Image (cartoon, rainbow, N blue to C red; front, side):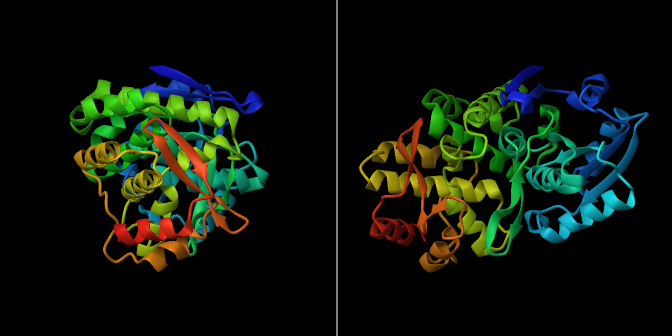
Length: 358
């Protein structure tokens, strides 16, 4: 097991990465401060891992809720149902809420923890690659709205993160690929050598080689923790973690949440950002092709769906958390391993990129 730390002063917490962590009852118990526990999972993960987790919670007063599975259920309605369960079980402010699942479970459970009785303790136990390398770390919690993704939420840090890489062995190939998109992101924005490692070891990741998976998770979490430590509330550098997300969120919202997985939309969005970076004279064509090739090898889409129009894309990009004074700020690449936040791009260039990609 490797332990990383998210250094946020009194809100600091560890990220535990390794195989078999769901069976580490003593370690999990060290992060639970009362006898009351609420486990939130979903209908896909529960049959696989809920009993194992409950085995670590013997002696605790445990309430469970399995949410429906899918991005389309990351909604205010689902959140309200979770509050109903917490209240019906008379969960107190001392309750520890444990999120067992992927990004949707972690985001909803974390937002519920931030709101319930003005804040209760919660633990992230991510079971997908995307959640382990990204959404479970950093304290972003939210639900979607039909007009925009993750527009209703809060920054609320977990007490700890348990990334059991054994859970990645049961992921559907499409879900694994979606997580790889977020792994590639870290190479693109912060670490060109890691990007090269991914080019050299993608077949091992796709084959679920445990050493390769653990290295990918550890390196991704290391980068995420470093960024969050200097910019917890996304007032500066943390915005760079959104490479491809403004384009990707527009794809998700335009198609309907759940039609494309988040990582699939982000992969395409990163290619669109790379294309725009090239047209600004930063990236060269060889590097844009490297990005396309790596994502294609991972089994990810690199072109947006044919049904997406320029007008559709612009409409949804306008409802983005990085919009300032009516201007959409984009994360673009100066080179592989170096990103920047840009708002002074020519509008005509953005329209050309969207038109050429749709």
